[in-house]
Image (cartoon, rainbow, N blue to C red):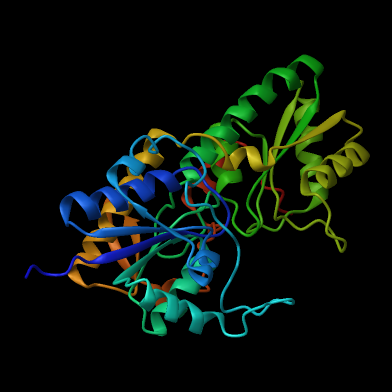
Length: 344
């Protein structure tokens, strides 16, 4: 009698993101080709585990998905440890454990951002063999230098800023562009610097509207015909929560008298084909996740530090965010080059 094949499950949860399919492919192909494992794709995040909505994955199904955006498995924001009104299942973690066992899984790979890694950590504490992979365009998962999806979002945001330069110059306007980032300003910071933004506002650095207005008025006095203002969606917008881009544009018009327009980039940043860099990172993450499983090294999230792929204990990751440090060297260098962060 031969030894029983290991059977692993893969799910993607939370928001969609370029590179998920590349990750699924990296996991699946490594598991099947290198280690002879069976692979189950679980549909629609943790919802699929509750409903046992699964599909066996083979090399044929994994072919041709490297360049695709989105996720062939689907995703959802359902959090099994969070009670929601109208829940039909009273004890979702218990049902997940039961279904994990009934499906014959030896391990589960959870692809997702902060919420997913927190759930993965809790499931690990419940006794399931879990490996996490960090996914989010926001780049705010603790324990890794970068998440896959960030590079693609950065390219999209930078290209949008490049295009705004031409129309801003033609009309001599202030152009405000709002990019994603509820808690972390990585996309705004990097795309703002890469795209030649004049003002960059991020959640981690408290800004003052007077300072922003003075920066723009000063540029106008120096005969600089236009300005680009890059805003993360998560910046504070007064007592009432307002759309960040529209709020800043309105305040700039009122305080400076300069013609101002806003653009909200929105979900465009999460769509489309991943960049080569994200495809490679996602593939490396997927392959290493299977290596951890093969070694029996569970309760870890795959991460990258420097250029080395590492395992990070899930219990250290859950509930923590990787934010921009206001003393970040890139912030300091941008200031030296005249970028305004709106501080008093």
